[in-house]
Length: 133
Length: 133
Length: 133
Length: 133
Image (cartoon, rainbow over all chains, first blue to last red; front, side, top):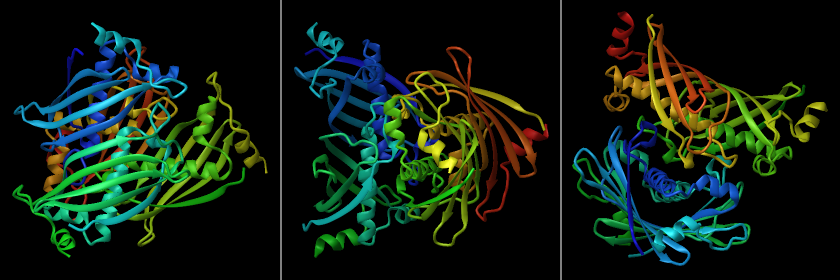
């Protein structure tokens, strides 16, 4: 049931901003996914390699609170903390905070699982071992 | 406190699918936003025109349940039902269902507000009147 | 060496506009790709199905002239005309024009090929037959 | 008529890959735009700030040769070399090369201009001075 913390720094690119001049709501999910996949890679789980093998990491549910909007060029950190919710479900708590002033931008709680070729839930061994420690 | 129902049919485009061969999680927020903005337009509220006037419709929170994944070319309907949650907050219930078999794809609950130039919450008059009926 | 003409009507979605308030340059490639894939589907070639079989339709070169910028909600038509450039290369001429006034938005010339599992150029039979007529 | 060289390192994010398992063609324009805007920022020109002032940097034409496809996680460098083509037009030569083996991925030639509030071409003073040296 242990939680791990991972952090990734990124910056807003102009094409990610929409006609309101701020990062589009959907783009934060790109940021959150990228940080999550980098976290998984850091513990030996490669999202793309697993997909090529027929094991798909799948998002089941997301809850996102939008606290403030990022604008062009803003630097921010995305954190990831993982915990096992059930034998086949992992919870990720992910926050985005703006680096210029430390203010919270996004609070996310995401639930994920993994499915094998037959569509059955099956967590990668690295995740099982991570939480068995 | 009345709710209105709106529905929009769309189809998956190939570039919206990721390396798992299914629509990327973030793209559903694009679909949901587009249907929501079309709904707003149908009741006389133009997201882009408001932004140009300095009134920004803003998402405060989303909860999304992912039920199944759409693949290339799949046709689907996005529904929108709105209700006033408080003097300055609107709730939108949005579902995506696959047209080939009617199966649920996405269930979303989203909370939005609007901010004027001074960053103060201020709902467009059309929304206030909608729920005053 | 025959050319075929195909046309698809679409409309700008708000999330496709960037901080200049117009459709982002890269998004036109999404529009062009989508119309091209719909054209290919209309002659029996399914991009996604081919990819699943290990045959990848690949873009080799694009030339795009940007004539004017589309804004939120604008309706437009994308046309596709194909011609065989060599035994393994197909040229697509694609134009985007704004429906409100018929003005040209985009002129594109794109060269594509197809690669089999071994990375060798190999056109799908439907394309070969199309141009053999 | 002087040319300047700028280089930016980036890496492929999973959500940028499409159902062929490689970076989608349109996404390279995102990479190229981001590197170009970072280059402009390095010489004192801020794309977003200019847009807010009513001066829009605009792409007139792109030519892109696709040499090979990037996959999940691949690291690459985007270079930018600028030259003045006319009193109101700037040419940017941009290459993308894969860092693992130095192989060329993209060769791009892009022509841009800038428009003031009245839609007239007007280059920012920093660009005029850059090429006047």
